[in-house]
Image (cartoon, rainbow, N blue to C red; front, side, top):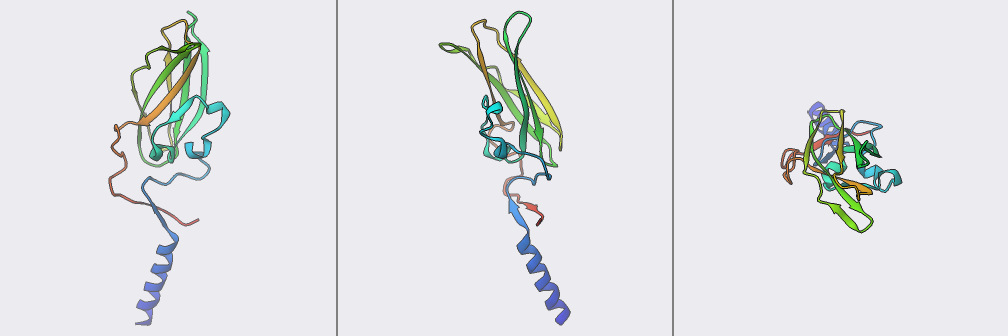
Amino acid sequence: MIRILATAVTAAVLAGCAVTQSTPPTFAGCKTWEQQAGAPQLASVAVLSPELAKVIGVQEVSTSRTGTGMAAVQTTVYNCSDVDVVLSMRTRFTGDRGQSEPPSVWKTVFLSPRGQATYGESAISQITSKVSVDINDGNRGQSQFAPGQGYVVPAK
């Protein structure tokens, strides 16, 4: 009887140390968008899903001009979790007087567990001088993480 009681108390104490969250846990040392938001070098990126902000990060954003003088952007994103993540990404184009051309179409980007991918886009208008990248949930608003599922984060 004492052994059963001791086991129950131990299980209750250990259960109190774990945290349950709606997104998968991230691996140690991986800087998510939540931790990066506001960084000046990433000001042209917008992560539109709060859930994604907890599991992905942006490694770099680089802009350049193509051989024909059009603005171009490349953005490298990475997955801080141990599950597949699907993103939709697009580029918005602006010039000195506002929008210079319509945004690009949403492109699907797949991130394997702890993987990374590079997204790129080029303008078609010579008057485009600035670009910004939008990142959204690739499942169009449906959580890609199982509805109602909780992910247990081990105590540190």
